Image 1 (cartoon, rainbow, N blue to C red):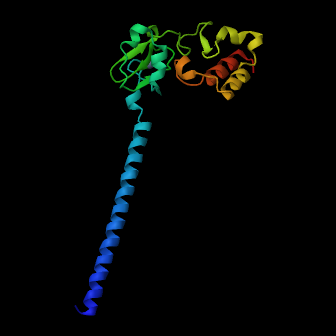
Image 2 (tube, rainbow, N blue to C red):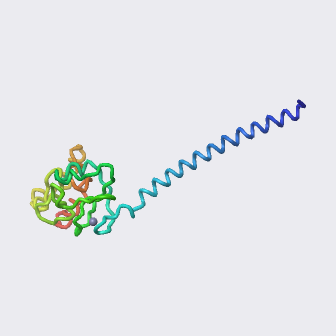
Image 3 (cartoon, protein in one colour):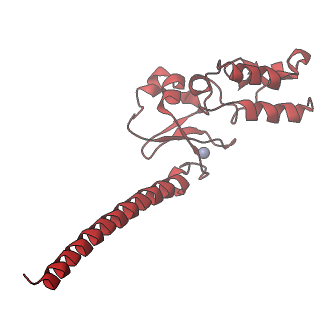
Length: 181
Ligand SMILES: [Zn+2]
């Protein structure tokens, strides 16, 4: 084989090798981008998480919260493979909903802070602070008290609070309304 042809063949092989590598890299990166893009779409797409009754957007809630707080007869209707959301609309009777079924206030063992303005309804479920107890002078530093419990990792909002998340925002709101801080 003439030397110049040999070199040309080697150059073509190297070019093909490089191109394949670059092409594969581009392909992998675009696949990654697509998966990120799809995840973002799911996370920001609120149309699928609208409460079927009030049509407001709800927040995803873990299954353990429903398992902890549904009454036995309602728990028997839970479909663990579905994704459930929490509806926080005060005038809406639906507490949890999914594509196929909903659970209403009567399905829960506890009253729901956002939907029941009774004085004995818990604001902080873990440590039993109701609206009434927040009014009492002794609980005026409730926010500091709860912050301390959070710091010490004593909170169990996932299994105690129907919203499945920290109550601190609710406590702050009630305390502000009471003009205590
Ligand atoms: Zn609702």
